[in-house]
Amino acid sequence: RPRLTIDGTDEVSPELALIKGRGGALLREKIVASSSEEGLVVVADSTKMVDSLGAGPLPVEVDSFGWETTFEDLASLGCEPELRMDQTDPVHPFVTDGGHYTADCTFGSIPDPASLEVEIKRIPGALECGLFVNLARAAIIATGDEVIEAKPERSD
Image (cartoon, rainbow, N blue to C red):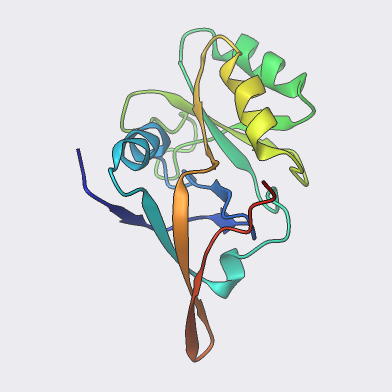
């Protein structure tokens, strides 16, 4: 097991809920972050800070078998899933490190990331989603000429 994971993020909320995986290694990133003994520390610039997750698409790694049905089920959660295409060969879907497809799901604001993560994982064919909830123990944020460490604002 890794002792500590330090990685970037696509979006980070004040509670340190994250969206990660827009680069294409979502499932593997989640495995590494979840298995780290001391948790996850994210490093980002201030453009990644959001009041509520969902400023950009939420990636969902899906099995290539039956992906159309999986996308329909994702859409039933209130998003617009779009099949990510390969940037070097745009007539073919992008294939993740694990050999899967990615649904880029536009939800808009995600007020309850933990509940949405549970709902997505209930869908057959949805292997993992880019919501990283209660995994980050700190965020190092560069804001212009200053670097700050953010700790989770939890409402326990």
